[in-house]
Amino acid sequence: MGLSRGVNSTLKAALAGHFCPVALFELVLPAETIRAHSGRGNLSWDAKTWVGIDRLARFAGPEELPGLARARATVEMVLSLEAWAEADGTANRNAPLTVWWGATTLPGGAVLIGEPMLLYAGYVDDWRRRLDRSGAGATHGLTIGLLPGPSARDGFPVVHSPEAQQALHATDTGARHFVNAVKRASNPPLFPEP
Image (cartoon, rainbow, N blue to C red; front, side, top):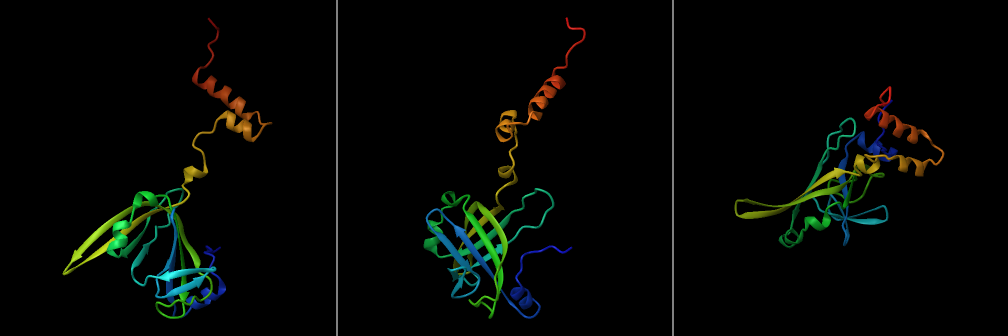
């Protein structure tokens, strides 16, 4: 049995020969939603417009790990001085970010072949600005640290009380018996009683 990634047949056929990869990024910030792709020009997909940023961004996905371990991913961007100065990480923490991967008809193109596949969905964990000086110029960069979301703890409560069990399952008496068993284990009865 193979692992399915949800690649549609048109994209899968394009991957068999020469293809031009493209990444699509969607970052939902409190004030706006930013949609960009790794090519040039505007790309239309999913009834939305994605702005081409060429080689100004790089996505590094996490390794696939077994179990509930959460691996980090990063997006690195090159920004203008004005955008770099306005980049506020505290306001954007926990903002959802989704990355799709697909193919275009030309290198750096804006015409998709088939439907892109979902590559990553997570949220912004940290937001670091950096200034790289090399030679005569300076590069204003931004590194966004991502975690896959939601976390395992968000989906499953760490503590489950008898009251919560009773609220979910009114006819269940197992929780009551469990509480009595815990009491007996931590404070066993003494025989004969004094």
